[in-house]
Amino acid sequence: MTHVTVYSTGPSCQRCRLTCQRLDALGIRYDLVDIHAEHNAEIRAFLVDELGYREAPVIEAGDARWSGFRPDLIDGLASGLGIG
Image (cartoon, rainbow, N blue to C red; front, side, top):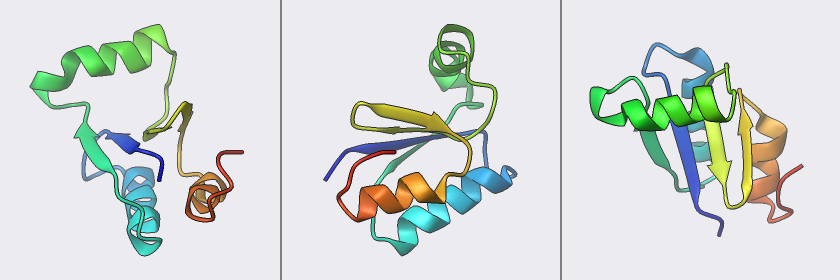
């Protein structure tokens, strides 16, 4: 299965929670990274300044990356169809 990382802005982010809940429900394992944590400042700068993301969460699944709560893309991961 594709390695998945969820870059979150923390527990108050509804889209982040929904994304994690969907991944959990489908049995997709992922790493959760809080980009507001002080030790993750470089990751946050990369996602925002370098890549231009302005919406949380940012999901990285293999070579694909997207932002926001995208159940269609998450379902694609679960079904083995890939992204998009």
